[in-house]
Length: 104
Image 1 (tube, one colour):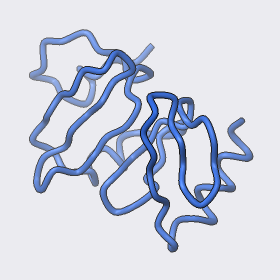
Image 2: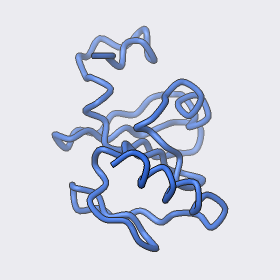
Image 3: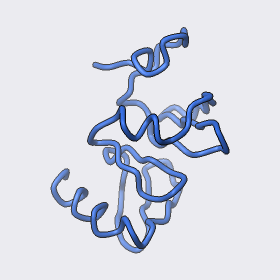
């Protein structure tokens, strides 16, 4: 199982990549939310994570990358298992819905 240390070499935690529910943009930082409710802030942009991570991670709008394992319901918005709701951008909607169908 890959760990976050591969993306963040100086980080000393033990978070597995599969435990990340979503990554949100926070100006020039990224806010990672895990399945235990922890919030971690790193000094990398979403673009770095988007190129480094593969499925089940998918960028759904300008400011959010989701782990598709935690998507509970898909429609005009995505409902996550932690109760949050994320909008899909119009430009990415077809790609996101196709990825969800192929992934599940």
